[in-house]
Image (cartoon, rainbow, N blue to C red; front, side, top):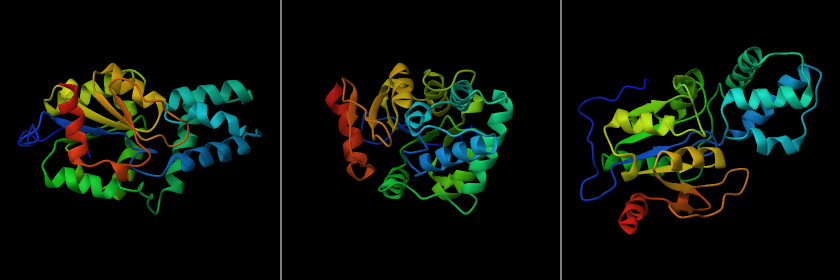
Length: 233
């Protein structure tokens, strides 16, 4: 799966102001945040360090370099960010080698968006090698575009990934809805001017103007997403 969108992809959802839906991956569509933490714990155990469970909320949902840098700083591990990133990606890939479970409601939502030809992008802070592996479980045909954290100069919480997705699909970010599970991802989407649906996976996220918080993707469907744009007019 590349970050190139076919020119023939429909640009708008018929009968709606909603132009596209952007979805985060880890913790939003797939139940993988625990896999990442387990990989981090295992890598640092091999390096002779024990991770504090309290650090989990700090590293969840952020770019790999930020998470790696934080864990090196708090543990004092004798390794640099580049080396640690390689080890973490390898451990994570080992854990998802046989597939990764989808979050409740994810398969139904993706199927509905595809059936109504709503332009959809997967936007993640994970690296391309990880995204392509997880897409096997998600179904690459469900996305017109995917953006990886190592394909942008500034990943989440900066707006760049969502602005790139909007540009790739030829849509206005202010007419798009983003589904995210972490404060870092929400900040990125809101900075890009998108409406946000937050589905907290690890740490709580408060409701705010332009942001709707739900308990599960089971509460999210196309009517719900279109309504977010309609009510904002």
